Image (cartoon, rainbow, N blue to C red; front, side, top):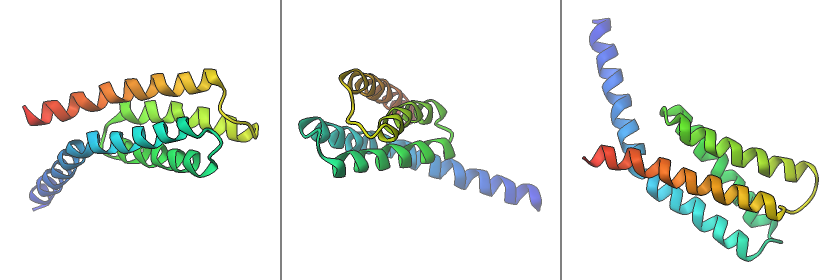
Length: 119
């Protein structure tokens, strides 16, 4: 009986993971859109807070469903944002470039699992 429950649980978790995987490109696009808006208005505290929240949420859910590479990339972005926040400063050009590089890496690492699922 316990084995049947375990198998059923694992099947439900896999279905949730697959559903989340299909949503990865959409979630990335939301993050990317917010980032692009922020880059157009670097003084916007609201946009940077929204961007941080999106990154933080994505990091947690990605880790929950086993997308550890994606979670680690988001963690790196989050570290940059927190460092700047602690220093009470705007993002430096160097950090903007680092975030952009991480976002490009995230896009690559998002498209791969989504494509594998659809194959």
